[in-house]
Structures are given as C-alpha cells and as structure tokens.
Image (cartoon, rainbow, N blue to C red; front, side, top):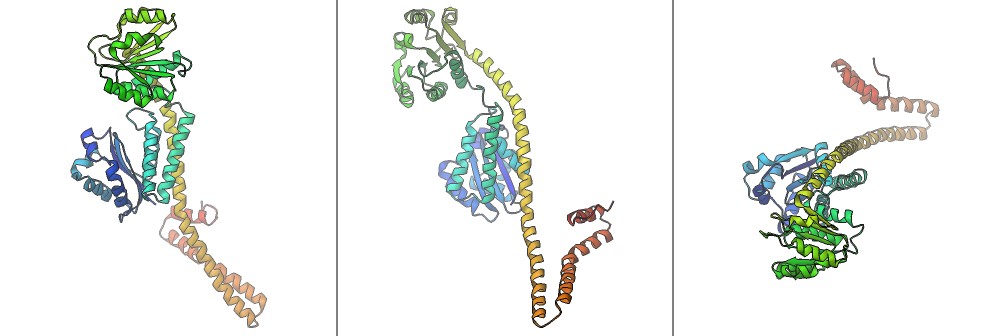
Length: 419
C-alpha cells in the first residue's frame, strides 16, 4: 500500500478556485466511482468543504501526477490553474496530514470541532460507494482515534473563538444553567442563527426572536422552537428575558437605557445579561451603568476570543506532539506489513525444502536404507539447503565491499557484529 493525499485549502487557494474543484453531493458518487475504479487507485476518500478539497488515496505505485490530472479533468479546470495551489503528502506526511485535519489543527479556526464530523461523513460516503479498501479503512479509523485522544488529553476545543459561541459561553458563565433561562434574540441574520444553534444545544427554556420582518424571524423561530415578535414589541417582552443577544443592521440603537431600566424594575432587579454584537451598536452604552445589568459589546467578546485563541495555540503544541507520535507509530505498523509477504514467502520456501527432503528420506527408509545414515544425510542436506542463500549473500556483500550490508545480513541471521 502507498498512502497519498492531494488537495487545496483556505491557505493555498482563493475561494474562486476552491469553488471550482468542490465535490457537491451531485458529483460525489460519480467521482468516488471513477477514483476507486481507476487503474492507479486501490481506494479513496474525498473530503470537500467550503475551506478544502482533498483526495485521500491508497495508490498503486507513485501516481500523484495521474491523480492531479484526474482532479483537473473531473472539474474541467486546466492543470496549470490548479497545480500552484495544490499540496501533496505521501506516506507518513499523508498520515500526519489527515490526523491534523481531523483534529482541527489545519482549520481556519484552530481546533474547531466541525471538521471531524465532515471527515467522518466523507469516510461514510466513501464506504457507501464502496471506495474504501483495507488500507484506507485503517488510516481513517486511526485518524479518528487520534482526534479523540487530542480532544481528551488537550483543551484545544474548549474555549470560545467565535462571536456566537463566545456570547453563549458568556451566558453560561453568568447563569449556572440555561435550562431555566428565557433568551431574547434581536435580529435573524447569520450570527444570530449561529447563536440560536448553540442555545438549542443548551436546552434554553424559552427563545424569543425579534426581527424587523416577521417572515425571516418566523423562519428562525420555527427552527429553534421559539416564538417571534416585531422589533416594536421588544419593550413588552424585555422584562421576561434573562439574556438578550442582539445583532441587527440598524444604524441607531434599538434598546435604550430607559427601556432596560423599566424591564429591570419589573424583574425586581433579577440580573439580566445583554450581549450587543452589532456594529453600529444596537444597545445604548449607558445601559451598562444600570445595576443588575451585565452589558457586553462585540469588543468585549473579541478580547475573550483573543485570549481563548492564545490558549488554543498553547494546547495545539501538545496536540501536534500527539499527532507526530501517532503518525510515526502508524507508519511503523505499515512498514511492518511490507515484511509480511517476504516472511510468508521465506517460510514457504523453507517448508518446501523440508518436505522435499523428507519425502525422499521416507522413500529411502521404505526401501530398507539405514535409518541412522538417513537421519544424518537428511540433517546435512537440510542444513546446506537452508544456509545456501544466506551464505551467498554474505559472500557477495564481503566481495563487493559493502560492510553495512554485511552487518545487516549478519544481524538478520543472529550472528555477532563483525566488529
């Protein structure tokens, strides 16, 4: 087996090129079929996300150029357009690359966990379309176990490094549990959608979506099992909100100091967390002066994110050590497999010699030959036959002046070092 990975990612290619070589669901089945049935690939997996397109293959011989040509041809992209952005990893480098990708060490956001799920889905798709051979199977299963080890032994994914995730993490720090919390989401854009997704995983008691257009707000509310209100209804519902997270495109603040002051009074000064991640701000800055109100802006969250990213980089050092150890171990195991056929052939050859000489001895014994003489003759012939090839190898190495080769042969025969 010979493992190879070829691809492009956010570090090597612009989005325009990544789009051209992406494998959508409509292309994947045909691509995997072509790949696995080619004359130069035993099996393969295609990982295609918004940030990367990669081929992981068990190739026959050294066929990286054929794989590159196939990738170019499949997407009708000129080879000269794609080659400058391609990276190629072979054997242990390929093993290590898949492990780093699975662990989030090669991601745009260091340590992000989503990539592992994407790699697992790519592997499942390849299995479904029967393009996974034993080498690929072992390779990917090892990568998954290494990713699990990294998550267990390091905290590389334990700190918030996105605005949406940081907002939810902040809420968890202020409220022991979000299961009894009512959350008011102001806006229904991409950031608020991400916030809503995180909140659902924390099983919030109630989610209210306030948006300028009820249609967009209703779409998000239905997704998270919440309810929708208009922006002008916020004053009526603010007092019921333990957490307010706002991100709109409004040029002026939507939530003012007076509105929040009235809500806090109605809440009998029960604490309220307000996270304003809009630019320009959705919440008047004076709201932060109120007692029992915790107001955080996008700048506050960014400082949290920067600190957490620095911590992730520290954890990544340990993760890289784990990946290096595991990839070297897996490569050693692969190399050991290369000896299996040789060992099997050597044993068969020795056994054939033994059976041939034994059959002749049994035949001679049946003809009345002296048993003692037969045993001596059998042992001598067997010894000579078995040591013939090693003896010639020793003589050749010595005659050709190859001391290193001579030492290797002596070591393999269990002899002392010639020095």
